Length: 76
Image (tube, rainbow, N blue to C red; front, side):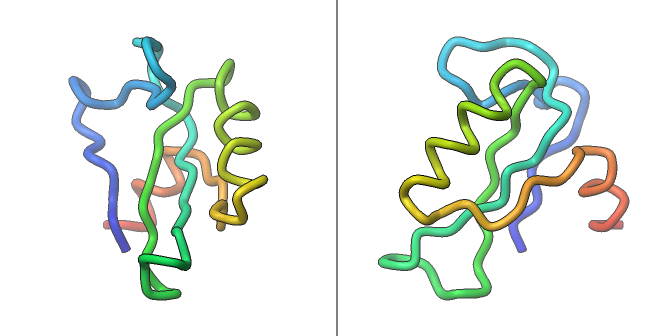
């Protein structure tokens, strides 16, 4: 599983132009190019979580949305 870089300097939202702190991890994969178990990640702030989730969801890419804190704990 790909884990996002959760160091304090890098935990910002993946939405274009957003510099807000990320609080969500959106795990996704593109079945046309990734194996089923592979997970890519985007980070999202509260404001962009729904927008980014919908963007991935309509393409059938979104696999899971997890609080950043939970994701980080699971990776340890």
